[in-house]
Length: 310
Ligand SMILES: Nc1nc2c([nH]c(=O)n2[C@H]2C[C@H](O)[C@@H](COP(=O)(O)OP(=O)(O)OP(=O)(O)O)O2)c(=O)[nH]1
Image 1 (cartoon, helix red, strand yellow):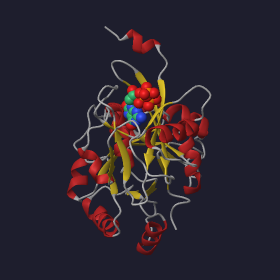
Image 2 (image 1 turned 135 degrees about the horizontal axis):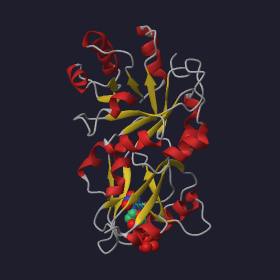
Image 3 (image 1 turned 180 degrees about the vertical axis):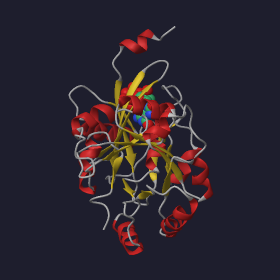
Image 4 (image 1 turned 45 degrees about the vertical axis):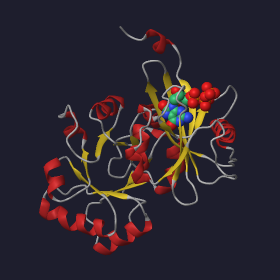
């Protein structure tokens, strides 16, 4: 029987902090045993009260729960999740600095963790996509055609530290291997199109499915990172069914290569992207300067060619 009580109620709006300490570790707290999702680790925060902005709610919660003061926070991701007993809409916000010594004012244990330690912790189910998202980059560089020179690649990787590269347009091991090696030498992760066996053969980090390849699948291929090209809600739904980590949602704007395709614009992007449990990248006429706007619209990051390559 459907859980009608959960269907009828609007989701509970909750803010939660991706709270970076000065030492580069994330500060987490453990939910008290008697509360919903008790005993699990959480990003500190709580329910948004009537009339509060998300930032105000987060500032109040962090003061109440951890005894710290914040002046800034920025949107990181929004995830809607249905627990059997309630629906939550979690507004994760990044906090890079705070004043005060964090301590569990409600007696809750706190912990500081490196990103690569998070996988060992038990989180509420709603948090899984955000834990994955934290390991993903803000910027995804799409390999242009014609191919860039090695000098161009090196300059571009240096200009966008922490980004990943989608090795678009290369479909055999001989063509891919030098690019994989060059990117890995720079500490950059790479995605390969459509073919999981080829991805593994060249030692790439993940698979990017073009829309037609995604449509042919009904379950996730066994890859460490899965990205899917999407243009509408049905394709995003399918990306979720596949358990994708990333979706490249396009076109945000019309581009010189596809001038006949009108861009969806940020409003439509937000309507499609916000609340989904995967990291969505805005693609199509997007530049790195669009990142703050993209975040407001529910994107994890920005992807593209023009505006990214040196
Ligand atoms: N703060 C927080 N809540 C989370 C996370 N993940 C997740 O599913 N939740 C859920 C658990 C709860 O159902 C809800 C948060 O509600 P809460 O009860 O902690 O809110 P609150 O601090 O305002 O609590 P209270 O006033 O009732 O004591 O969101 C997370 O990472 N952080």
